[in-house]
Every structure is written in structure tokens, then in C-alpha cells.
Picture (cartoon, rainbow, N blue to C red):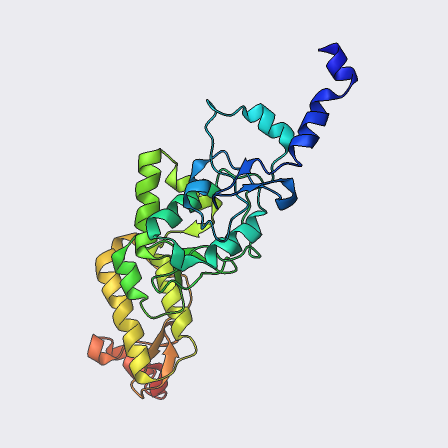
Length: 274
């Protein structure tokens, strides 16, 4: 070995190999290091990615066939996660929900995995519209909550994608809670749904919209009242006074129609309080 080391034989072999078109890519061609080949140990990438877009990705070779230590010496590239996300999401139509879920799970194993508000969109909703990491992204884990905020400006992952993520995590024994945490995905809580509803209707003043808001809130309350704190401490809920004006709940009082005769008399001078 000593003579070879003195001659830098091993690095010379590596450098010479890089000049030849001997690295098999997913596009059924052989490429050299001039094309900057990308290699991932996880076979999901080579088997799932769109070969027309990711033609510099090398086919997967198992460890029994290929010496990964030697591969490390070749210094294959990995994609920058942000540009990788962008390239994948630009071709949503190519991937089924199942394949896309496999990629999302496989991405957890890549180097320097990180998600922040500047990360390119990766998840999509039921209309296959990309969701932004700048705002909270929710999983559709409660049908009541999802239907309550139907039509509101809330980011919810596509149902089929969510179901596939859960199923594959179970089969592959991947920690689903860890996946949610690393991708900064949120589960709905009753308090959060109420806040979302109030936020959405905050700037609306029509009678119909106020009635719609309170109908949604009441339906949630009937089913989930045990999960609510005794005294709501969140944002004030807009209600309609007897004069049909919009008033925040904590500024409004029950009238004699609700058995509050004294309160009715005290505030009879201001019907907008009743």
C-alpha cells in the first residue's frame, strides 16, 4: 500500500473516473461528473422522481453491490433542499398522492434538512394548490373541524396526501409525530378553530355573515364543549344586538327574553348593548 500512497494512486484513480461517462442515471443514460451527478442512498428518489426533470440523479445501487465508502470518495452531490422542493412541486401533476408522500418521507433523511418560512412550497391542498410555509399548515385529522372552516382562508393538506403519509409511516415504522414536527405541520384544536373562524369574520359586518359565524361556533360548542375552557379567553365573538348592529360578545348583555329583566332595565337606554 505504501508505494500507492506515495504516488497518490487512489486520488488519481478517482479523478480519472470522474472524466468518463460511466455513472448510470435515472434517464437511462450514462453521465460524467461534468453533469454533476446526484446520489441518494434512499432508493425512493431514483425510483420516484421524474427522470425528465431529474436526469442527473443516479440509479439506486444497494450496499451489497456498491461500496458506499468508495462512493463517498467520489463525493456525489445532494440537492439543496429548497431548490429540490421547488423542482418537485413544479411537477405535481407527475406524481400520485402515494408517490408524493413517499418523497416527502424520504426527504427527512436528506442532509441539512430544514424548514422555515422561506422554504419553497411542498405540500398542496385538495385543489393541488401549493401551501406556503409562511403560514400555518394544518392536517385534516378532524372532519368536524375541517367542515367548520370550509371556504375560509386556511391552509389544509390534501386529504389523500395526508392519508398516504400516515399509512406509509405506519408501514415503514416512521414516527408520524416526528414528521409533523419537522415539517412544522399542525393539528387542529377546538380553540384554534374558533380563533380561525373569528379571524375570518372579523372584518365582516353583514347580518348573514354574523349568523353564519355563530351557527358554526354553536355547532362546534355542542359537540366539543368539554374541551373548551369554562370562560372563553380568546378574541371577542361578534354578535347582533336587538338593533341588528354588530357588537363584540363581551360588550353585549342578555335581555328579558333570556330571563335577565334587571339587566334589560339597566341598559334600556342603549339598545345596542342588548
